[in-house]
Image (cartoon, rainbow, N blue to C red):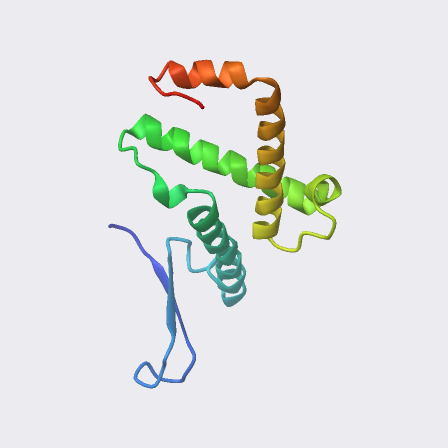
Length: 146
């Protein structure tokens, strides 16, 4: 890498040898911009990125991606982002709770479970009216729906 970098080091002690936690922030922002306030503001916003990755890896299947091609990986990411945005929007606006819960949904995981319940309910209702269509679909793969 070429060019100047600004490095911020945050420790929970006065010396490196006595610190049990050390965080580094490296940026190519000019030193005039990378003030203490800017570093704290920027770093605090990063936590939401970490929360997003933890959520999509743990609950929306990001880490289960089995594709290797660039276009397939991009499609998988787009689907994960769309699902996350859709569920988050419904969670923040209370839409899932109004339609699929008898209590407030306080976490993303609770909102996701309400969404899964809604999808399962609608699929089972559809399946009850379209068993022949579903059986024909499975038969096209050489499977028997019995």
